[in-house]
Amino acid sequence: MKSSQDFFSTTSHQHTRMNCSSGASTQTTDLPIRKHPSNTDFDIVATYRELLASDPDLTKPVAAIESLIALLNTVPSSTVFETLETVRIHSDILKASVANPVPLTAGSDLFLQYLVSSLKEQDASFEAVRHHLLRNGRLFASRAVAARQGVAEAGWRYIKEGKCVLTHGASRSVTGVFEQAVKQQGATFKVIYVRDEARPNESDRVVKEMRHMGIPVAEVAEASVAHVMALLRQVDMVMVGAEAVTQNGGIISRMGTFQIAQLAGQAKIPFYVAAETHKFVRKFPMAQRDLGFKQEVLNFSTKERSAWPKDTVDYTPPAFITNLITENGVKLPGYVFEQLLDIYGSLNG
Image (cartoon, rainbow, N blue to C red; front, side, top):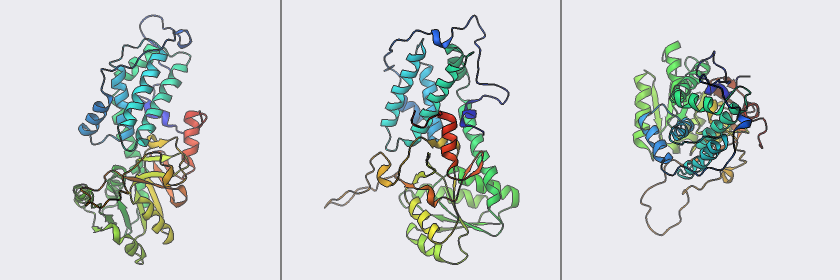
């Protein structure tokens, strides 16, 4: 089974065990353990936001990982404990700075697991792992792009000639699948795009990108989805992205995704989710109330609301998901549990 641990490999022929080339390496078990305070000079929140703003190809989990690598470049840690403690502290600071911390949890957990597993390797020294990360930090961004390309390669075959796909949001993985389908078979399919009136500029941009590919696009309002779904032969499949994929195979995605999934289920329309495996997170919600963070969706007031909340998400249970399209292939929702078990050993650990 291909593991998300491969996301951290610099090349296919390199292995996780990294030897320090200069001098004798001190083994991990011999390193002194002492508590080290957090580096208060490093602004991980500003670093994270700058990375996202400067590179549109970065996903939130990967931006979190790159922020933590930048942190290690500023911290004069000399022990394993100091490094892990610093990463944990700054991960908590970063997650506390956003309304939806789940995607950042996926990235920071994956990064911490990589550090721990690498340092447990018999031949890996602390300095070797640290130098490897600092030397190859920007490769994480290229790995994210490669994963998205893998999703596109796995998913384009599901878009058959003459079919109509309904989507919403601004998932780069979904548009990547569409782009690959156009390259392979031409713009022989149609897209129904559900506009997000809270983000009109984003909706305009996504529609423009698809039409630039030559894809015929019909824009509909969110209130029209049930009507469009009910029209015979108008929607053959639904494809959406995700901010995070939970360990039970559900997804946390753009608000309205759950409603679309329910309507697709009633109409017996396949519902696909295009998502990279680094978005898999050790979280097990059962319903909307289990997301674990607050969203200002309900605001009872006698005064006019000045603005509607943005970046809100909802939870879609795995029962409504036909398949996950990942860089490792098209999988059933249960694949997430297997993958996380392979990475972390114990999902409760």
